[in-house]
Image (cartoon, rainbow, N blue to C red; front, side, top):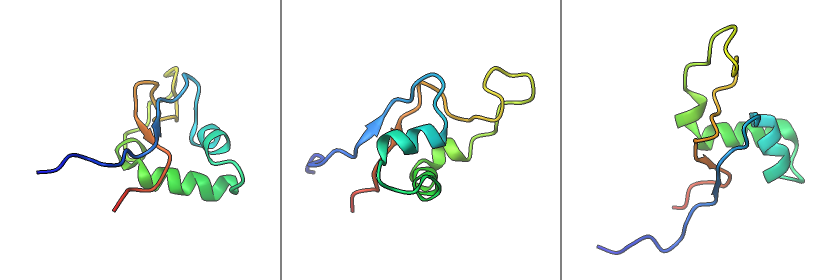
Length: 76
């Protein structure tokens, strides 16, 4: 069995990151809406997470600073 030869680019989000802030920082030159859509499709483990409820410090934002966020498409 061979090891991985390429590593998919990923980041740890900053404490107050949103899909939009990550898209604007990591995918410059791309329209925000398109970049957000790609990020969400590459990060279903975060995108499909139940949103924190009303009154929560992270209300409406599923992204945690401990998440691994992929910022490029999967290697095939």
